[in-house]
Length: 234
Ligand code: HPA
Image 1 (cartoon, protein in one colour):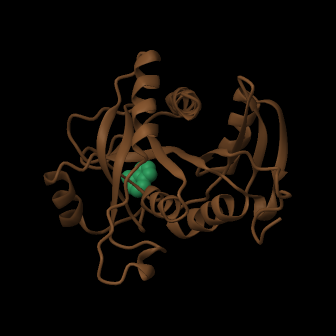
Image 2: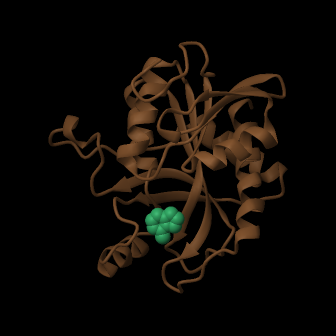
């Protein structure tokens, strides 16, 4: 048991999938895991451990934003022994060729700030996904008939951002999408020698204002969990 995770030591699997929303964790545990047991509900942040194809897996919410994800990623990796952590979430598209529902595998995650910044001093660390995991996710996507976009994303501190010039600069530099957690996940994982990846669905388009309908969200959520599960045990 750690400050924010009520699970006993040993109740968290080495492979953890992290949606932002705890109710999505509950949905995914019901949908994909056998014998899923609730292992955390501290502050309503639900976590479940069960098996998928015989492999032990934990599905645990991260909350929204890097400060929240950082708390859970630190405790899961450092104290509960998680070795592979995959964020499963949504992002806003920053490139015109991206459609709602498209899947992005985040090779890198830039940010303006993150809870890890303090330790880097003058270094601008480049948070990146685990290469093996990224390759496995690309293969798993292809098997499911999905052609993912692979490239850089931006992890923001603000959902309601008032800086169109910043998103424009990111777009001009080929950044695919914007979300709020991956950069910190990649840094915490790097610090503790764990593997990390973010598998994201485009839920909205910042340029056009288009948003994905609720039903399509559920379908793509399922696709992301399938990709994350297959790539964890490739
Ligand atoms: N901005 C930040 N985070 C997001 C977005 C967005 O447009 N869409 C989904 N997560």
